[in-house]
Image (cartoon, protein in one colour):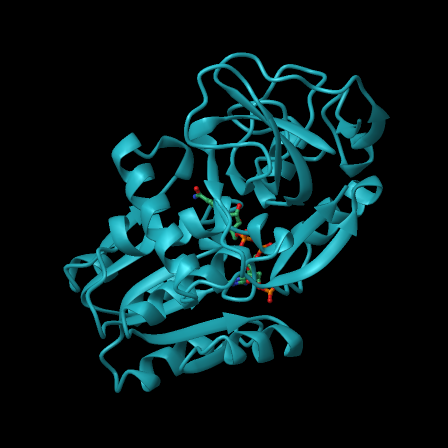
Length: 320
Ligand code: NAP
Protein backbone atom coordinates (compact mmCIF):
# COMPACT_ATOMS: atom_id res chain seq x y z
CA UNK A 1 0.00 0.00 0.00
CA UNK A 2 1.08 3.55 -0.66
CA UNK A 3 1.62 5.93 2.22
CA UNK A 4 3.46 9.10 3.17
CA UNK A 5 6.53 8.54 5.36
CA UNK A 6 8.54 11.12 7.27
CA UNK A 7 12.15 9.96 7.81
CA UNK A 8 13.48 13.29 9.18
CA UNK A 9 11.65 16.21 10.79
CA UNK A 10 11.69 19.32 8.62
CA UNK A 11 9.78 21.29 5.98
CA UNK A 12 6.92 19.98 3.78
CA UNK A 13 9.52 18.33 1.48
CA UNK A 14 10.10 15.58 4.09
CA UNK A 15 6.65 14.15 3.22
CA UNK A 16 7.54 11.34 0.77
CA UNK A 17 5.31 8.76 -0.90
CA UNK A 18 6.50 5.18 -0.26
CA UNK A 19 5.27 1.63 -0.89
CA UNK A 20 4.88 -0.48 2.26
CA UNK A 21 3.65 -3.95 3.07
CA UNK A 22 -0.15 -4.15 3.51
CA UNK A 23 -1.23 -3.73 7.15
CA UNK A 24 -2.98 -6.43 9.23
CA UNK A 25 -5.00 -5.79 12.38
CA UNK A 26 -3.83 -7.25 15.70
CA UNK A 27 -6.45 -8.21 18.29
CA UNK A 28 -8.44 -5.10 19.25
CA UNK A 29 -7.52 -3.28 16.02
CA UNK A 30 -9.50 -2.40 12.89
CA UNK A 31 -8.02 -2.00 9.42
CA UNK A 32 -9.62 0.66 7.22
CA UNK A 33 -9.18 1.46 3.57
CA UNK A 34 -8.61 5.22 3.69
CA UNK A 35 -10.73 7.15 1.19
CA UNK A 36 -9.76 10.61 2.49
CA UNK A 37 -7.39 11.94 5.16
CA UNK A 38 -7.86 15.28 6.93
CA UNK A 39 -4.95 17.74 6.93
CA UNK A 40 -4.73 19.69 10.19
CA UNK A 41 -2.29 22.46 11.20
CA UNK A 42 -1.05 20.18 14.02
CA UNK A 43 0.22 17.71 11.37
CA UNK A 44 2.63 20.43 10.20
CA UNK A 45 3.80 21.27 13.73
CA UNK A 46 4.55 17.56 14.34
CA UNK A 47 6.29 17.21 10.95
CA UNK A 48 8.56 20.16 11.73
CA UNK A 49 9.78 18.41 14.92
CA UNK A 50 9.00 21.41 17.15
CA UNK A 51 5.78 20.05 18.70
CA UNK A 52 5.90 18.95 22.38
CA UNK A 53 4.83 15.40 21.43
CA UNK A 54 6.70 13.99 18.42
CA UNK A 55 6.48 10.41 17.11
CA UNK A 56 9.44 8.11 16.60
CA UNK A 57 10.93 8.34 13.11
CA UNK A 58 10.04 7.16 10.52
CA UNK A 59 6.29 7.70 10.80
CA UNK A 60 3.17 8.19 8.68
CA UNK A 61 1.46 11.51 9.50
CA UNK A 62 -2.23 12.23 9.91
CA UNK A 63 -4.84 11.87 12.64
CA UNK A 64 -8.17 12.22 10.83
CA UNK A 65 -9.55 9.95 8.10
CA UNK A 66 -12.64 8.40 6.58
CA UNK A 67 -12.98 5.13 4.72
CA UNK A 68 -14.33 1.58 4.64
CA UNK A 69 -13.56 -1.12 7.18
CA UNK A 70 -11.49 -3.86 5.48
CA UNK A 71 -10.92 -6.37 8.29
CA UNK A 72 -11.28 -6.42 12.05
CA UNK A 73 -9.02 -8.04 14.65
CA UNK A 74 -10.12 -10.43 17.36
CA UNK A 75 -12.43 -8.92 19.97
CA UNK A 76 -13.95 -6.15 17.81
CA UNK A 77 -17.71 -5.95 18.42
CA UNK A 78 -19.14 -2.61 17.32
CA UNK A 79 -17.54 -2.28 13.84
CA UNK A 80 -17.78 -4.76 10.92
CA UNK A 81 -16.07 -5.15 7.53
CA UNK A 82 -17.80 -2.96 4.94
CA UNK A 83 -18.85 -0.24 7.43
CA UNK A 84 -18.34 3.36 6.30
CA UNK A 85 -16.46 5.07 9.13
CA UNK A 86 -14.61 8.22 10.12
CA UNK A 87 -11.57 8.07 12.35
CA UNK A 88 -10.65 10.45 15.14
CA UNK A 89 -7.07 9.31 15.40
CA UNK A 90 -5.29 6.22 14.07
CA UNK A 91 -2.53 3.91 15.26
CA UNK A 92 -0.54 3.86 12.00
CA UNK A 93 -1.18 7.35 10.50
CA UNK A 94 -3.91 8.47 8.09
CA UNK A 95 -1.88 9.78 5.10
CA UNK A 96 -2.03 6.31 3.52
CA UNK A 97 -4.15 3.88 1.56
CA UNK A 98 -4.69 1.82 4.74
CA UNK A 99 -4.78 2.70 8.43
CA UNK A 100 -4.97 0.68 11.64
CA UNK A 101 -7.29 2.09 14.29
CA UNK A 102 -8.55 1.26 17.75
CA UNK A 103 -12.28 0.54 17.76
CA UNK A 104 -12.81 3.58 20.01
CA UNK A 105 -11.26 5.84 17.31
CA UNK A 106 -13.93 4.84 14.75
CA UNK A 107 -17.43 6.21 14.29
CA UNK A 108 -20.06 5.27 11.72
CA UNK A 109 -20.28 7.80 8.87
CA UNK A 110 -23.91 8.61 8.01
CA UNK A 111 -24.82 7.80 4.37
CA UNK A 112 -25.41 11.50 3.66
CA UNK A 113 -21.83 12.44 4.60
CA UNK A 114 -19.09 11.89 1.96
CA UNK A 115 -15.69 10.39 2.75
CA UNK A 116 -14.00 13.77 2.24
CA UNK A 117 -16.46 15.34 4.66
CA UNK A 118 -15.80 12.46 7.06
CA UNK A 119 -12.10 13.29 7.04
CA UNK A 120 -13.01 16.86 8.03
CA UNK A 121 -14.77 15.87 11.26
CA UNK A 122 -12.23 14.59 13.84
CA UNK A 123 -10.03 17.42 15.08
CA UNK A 124 -12.04 20.39 13.73
CA UNK A 125 -15.46 19.41 15.09
CA UNK A 126 -14.15 18.00 18.38
CA UNK A 127 -12.22 21.25 18.91
CA UNK A 128 -15.24 23.40 18.09
CA UNK A 129 -17.50 21.40 20.43
CA UNK A 130 -15.00 21.41 23.30
CA UNK A 131 -14.32 25.15 22.92
CA UNK A 132 -17.97 26.20 22.75
CA UNK A 133 -19.68 23.76 25.06
CA UNK A 134 -17.11 22.62 27.63
CA UNK A 135 -14.83 25.68 27.80
CA UNK A 136 -17.12 28.65 27.06
CA UNK A 137 -20.24 26.89 28.41
CA UNK A 138 -22.39 28.81 25.94
CA UNK A 139 -26.03 29.52 26.57
CA UNK A 140 -28.69 29.73 23.84
CA UNK A 141 -28.93 33.14 22.12
CA UNK A 142 -25.60 34.44 23.44
CA UNK A 143 -23.32 36.26 21.00
CA UNK A 144 -20.03 34.81 19.73
CA UNK A 145 -17.12 36.18 17.73
CA UNK A 146 -15.48 33.37 15.76
CA UNK A 147 -12.14 35.00 15.07
CA UNK A 148 -10.95 32.93 12.09
CA UNK A 149 -14.18 31.37 10.81
CA UNK A 150 -13.17 30.34 7.27
CA UNK A 151 -11.04 27.27 8.18
CA UNK A 152 -11.79 23.76 9.42
CA UNK A 153 -12.38 24.65 13.07
CA UNK A 154 -14.07 28.02 12.44
CA UNK A 155 -16.73 26.59 10.11
CA UNK A 156 -17.48 23.81 12.61
CA UNK A 157 -17.86 26.54 15.28
CA UNK A 158 -20.42 28.40 13.11
CA UNK A 159 -22.55 25.27 12.63
CA UNK A 160 -22.47 24.38 16.34
CA UNK A 161 -23.16 27.97 17.43
CA UNK A 162 -26.23 27.98 15.16
CA UNK A 163 -27.62 24.95 16.94
CA UNK A 164 -27.61 27.17 20.07
CA UNK A 165 -29.32 30.00 18.16
CA UNK A 166 -26.34 32.21 18.93
CA UNK A 167 -25.73 35.56 17.28
CA UNK A 168 -22.63 34.70 15.25
CA UNK A 169 -19.98 37.17 14.10
CA UNK A 170 -17.45 35.37 11.89
CA UNK A 171 -14.22 36.69 10.41
CA UNK A 172 -12.15 35.75 7.37
CA UNK A 173 -9.23 37.27 5.49
CA UNK A 174 -10.24 36.88 1.84
CA UNK A 175 -13.27 37.64 -0.32
CA UNK A 176 -13.89 33.90 -0.90
CA UNK A 177 -13.58 33.20 2.84
CA UNK A 178 -15.95 36.04 3.73
CA UNK A 179 -18.52 34.70 1.24
CA UNK A 180 -18.18 31.17 2.65
CA UNK A 181 -18.61 32.34 6.25
CA UNK A 182 -21.69 34.29 5.14
CA UNK A 183 -23.13 31.28 3.28
CA UNK A 184 -22.59 29.11 6.34
CA UNK A 185 -24.98 31.40 8.17
CA UNK A 186 -22.90 33.84 10.23
CA UNK A 187 -25.20 36.73 11.19
CA UNK A 188 -22.36 39.21 10.58
CA UNK A 189 -19.13 38.80 8.62
CA UNK A 190 -15.97 40.86 9.21
CA UNK A 191 -12.58 41.01 7.50
CA UNK A 192 -9.75 40.39 10.00
CA UNK A 193 -7.28 42.04 7.59
CA UNK A 194 -8.89 45.41 8.48
CA UNK A 195 -7.26 47.07 11.48
CA UNK A 196 -10.57 48.40 12.89
CA UNK A 197 -12.66 45.24 12.58
CA UNK A 198 -12.82 44.81 16.36
CA UNK A 199 -14.51 48.24 16.64
CA UNK A 200 -17.22 46.82 14.38
CA UNK A 201 -17.74 43.92 16.82
CA UNK A 202 -18.43 46.47 19.55
CA UNK A 203 -20.88 48.43 17.41
CA UNK A 204 -22.65 45.27 16.20
CA UNK A 205 -23.40 44.47 19.85
CA UNK A 206 -24.55 48.06 20.65
CA UNK A 207 -21.44 48.70 22.71
CA UNK A 208 -22.04 45.68 24.97
CA UNK A 209 -19.40 43.37 23.48
CA UNK A 210 -19.76 39.65 22.75
CA UNK A 211 -20.38 36.94 25.33
CA UNK A 212 -17.85 34.58 23.79
CA UNK A 213 -14.77 34.88 21.59
CA UNK A 214 -13.28 31.78 19.93
CA UNK A 215 -9.77 32.82 18.96
CA UNK A 216 -7.77 31.06 16.21
CA UNK A 217 -4.73 33.39 16.32
CA UNK A 218 -4.34 34.65 19.88
CA UNK A 219 -0.77 35.96 19.50
CA UNK A 220 -2.11 38.44 16.92
CA UNK A 221 -5.54 39.28 18.34
CA UNK A 222 -5.68 38.81 22.11
CA UNK A 223 -4.92 42.43 23.19
CA UNK A 224 -7.57 43.84 20.81
CA UNK A 225 -10.11 41.11 21.63
CA UNK A 226 -10.41 41.97 25.32
CA UNK A 227 -12.25 45.32 24.90
CA UNK A 228 -14.77 43.49 22.67
CA UNK A 229 -15.81 41.11 25.48
CA UNK A 230 -19.07 41.70 27.37
CA UNK A 231 -19.23 41.66 31.17
CA UNK A 232 -18.83 38.02 32.21
CA UNK A 233 -17.46 37.21 28.75
CA UNK A 234 -15.38 34.11 28.01
CA UNK A 235 -12.52 34.00 25.52
CA UNK A 236 -11.27 30.59 24.44
CA UNK A 237 -7.78 30.38 22.97
CA UNK A 238 -7.93 27.69 20.29
CA UNK A 239 -4.92 28.71 18.20
CA UNK A 240 -1.77 30.75 18.86
CA UNK A 241 1.53 30.89 17.01
CA UNK A 242 3.64 33.18 19.18
CA UNK A 243 3.59 35.52 22.16
CA UNK A 244 1.74 38.75 22.94
CA UNK A 245 1.18 41.22 25.78
CA UNK A 246 -2.23 42.05 27.29
CA UNK A 247 -3.64 44.57 29.78
CA UNK A 248 -4.98 42.44 32.69
CA UNK A 249 -7.28 45.28 33.74
CA UNK A 250 -9.35 44.65 30.59
CA UNK A 251 -10.15 41.19 31.96
CA UNK A 252 -10.63 42.38 35.54
CA UNK A 253 -13.17 45.14 34.85
CA UNK A 254 -15.33 42.76 32.82
CA UNK A 255 -15.15 39.85 35.23
CA UNK A 256 -14.11 38.00 32.09
CA UNK A 257 -12.27 34.69 31.67
CA UNK A 258 -9.59 33.58 29.28
CA UNK A 259 -9.60 29.83 28.83
CA UNK A 260 -6.92 27.88 26.99
CA UNK A 261 -7.91 24.61 25.37
CA UNK A 262 -5.88 21.65 24.13
CA UNK A 263 -7.78 18.84 22.47
CA UNK A 264 -5.11 16.29 23.30
CA UNK A 265 -5.61 16.51 27.06
CA UNK A 266 -9.41 16.36 27.37
CA UNK A 267 -10.98 13.80 29.70
CA UNK A 268 -12.34 10.50 28.41
CA UNK A 269 -15.79 11.60 29.57
CA UNK A 270 -15.62 14.83 27.53
CA UNK A 271 -14.37 12.87 24.51
CA UNK A 272 -17.35 10.51 24.74
CA UNK A 273 -19.78 13.45 25.10
CA UNK A 274 -18.23 15.15 22.10
CA UNK A 275 -18.49 12.16 19.78
CA UNK A 276 -22.04 11.29 20.88
CA UNK A 277 -23.10 14.88 20.14
CA UNK A 278 -21.25 15.02 16.81
CA UNK A 279 -22.82 11.75 15.69
CA UNK A 280 -26.29 13.17 16.43
CA UNK A 281 -25.48 16.45 14.63
CA UNK A 282 -24.17 14.63 11.55
CA UNK A 283 -27.21 12.37 11.44
CA UNK A 284 -29.73 15.21 11.68
CA UNK A 285 -27.81 17.41 9.21
CA UNK A 286 -27.03 20.28 11.64
CA UNK A 287 -23.35 19.49 11.07
CA UNK A 288 -22.26 19.47 7.44
CA UNK A 289 -18.45 19.68 6.98
CA UNK A 290 -17.21 21.98 4.22
CA UNK A 291 -14.38 20.57 2.09
CA UNK A 292 -12.43 23.29 0.31
CA UNK A 293 -9.67 21.28 -1.41
CA UNK A 294 -9.10 17.62 -2.27
CA UNK A 295 -5.38 17.02 -2.94
CA UNK A 296 -3.89 13.71 -4.21
CA UNK A 297 -1.87 11.87 -1.53
CA UNK A 298 1.31 12.13 -3.60
CA UNK A 299 1.09 15.94 -3.23
CA UNK A 300 0.94 15.87 0.59
CA UNK A 301 3.70 18.52 0.73
CA UNK A 302 1.38 20.96 -1.11
CA UNK A 303 -1.36 20.29 1.43
CA UNK A 304 0.99 21.31 4.26
CA UNK A 305 1.94 24.53 2.47
CA UNK A 306 -1.76 25.26 1.87
CA UNK A 307 -2.98 24.62 5.43
CA UNK A 308 -0.40 27.01 6.90
CA UNK A 309 -1.07 29.81 4.44
CA UNK A 310 -4.08 32.09 4.09
CA UNK A 311 -6.60 32.21 2.64
CA UNK A 312 -8.36 29.30 4.29
CA UNK A 313 -11.45 28.00 2.54
CA UNK A 314 -12.97 25.04 4.41
CA UNK A 315 -11.11 21.83 5.01
CA UNK A 316 -8.15 20.43 3.06
CA UNK A 317 -8.20 16.64 2.58
CA UNK A 318 -5.80 14.18 0.93
CA UNK A 319 -7.14 11.53 -1.45
CA UNK A 320 -5.08 8.28 -1.61
P1 NAP B 1 -7.24 26.42 9.10
O1 NAP B 1 -8.28 25.56 8.47
O2 NAP B 1 -5.92 26.57 8.45
O3 NAP B 1 -7.89 27.87 9.34
C1 NAP B 1 -7.13 28.92 9.90
C2 NAP B 1 -8.07 30.05 10.24
O4 NAP B 1 -7.34 31.10 10.88
C3 NAP B 1 -8.72 30.65 9.00
O5 NAP B 1 -10.06 30.96 9.25
C4 NAP B 1 -7.89 31.90 8.79
O6 NAP B 1 -8.59 32.91 8.05
C5 NAP B 1 -7.73 32.32 10.24
N1 NAP B 1 -6.82 33.44 10.39
C6 NAP B 1 -5.73 33.79 9.63
N2 NAP B 1 -5.27 34.99 10.04
C7 NAP B 1 -6.07 35.41 11.06
C8 NAP B 1 -6.13 36.56 11.87
N3 NAP B 1 -5.24 37.55 11.74
N4 NAP B 1 -7.09 36.65 12.80
C9 NAP B 1 -8.01 35.67 12.96
N5 NAP B 1 -8.02 34.55 12.23
C10 NAP B 1 -7.06 34.42 11.29
O7 NAP B 1 -6.93 25.88 10.58
P2 NAP B 1 -7.94 25.21 11.64
O8 NAP B 1 -7.87 23.76 11.52
O9 NAP B 1 -9.26 25.92 11.52
O10 NAP B 1 -7.24 25.61 13.02
C11 NAP B 1 -7.22 26.97 13.46
C12 NAP B 1 -6.17 27.13 14.57
O11 NAP B 1 -6.56 26.37 15.71
C13 NAP B 1 -4.77 26.62 14.18
O12 NAP B 1 -3.78 27.48 14.71
C14 NAP B 1 -4.68 25.27 14.85
O13 NAP B 1 -3.35 24.88 15.14
C15 NAP B 1 -5.50 25.52 16.12
N6 NAP B 1 -6.10 24.32 16.71
C16 NAP B 1 -5.91 24.13 18.04
C17 NAP B 1 -6.47 23.06 18.67
C18 NAP B 1 -6.30 22.91 20.16
O14 NAP B 1 -6.45 21.80 20.71
N7 NAP B 1 -6.05 24.01 20.87
C19 NAP B 1 -7.21 22.10 17.95
C20 NAP B 1 -7.39 22.33 16.57
C21 NAP B 1 -6.83 23.46 15.96
P3 NAP B 1 -8.12 33.41 6.56
O15 NAP B 1 -7.23 32.36 5.98
O16 NAP B 1 -9.42 33.58 5.85
O17 NAP B 1 -7.39 34.70 6.78
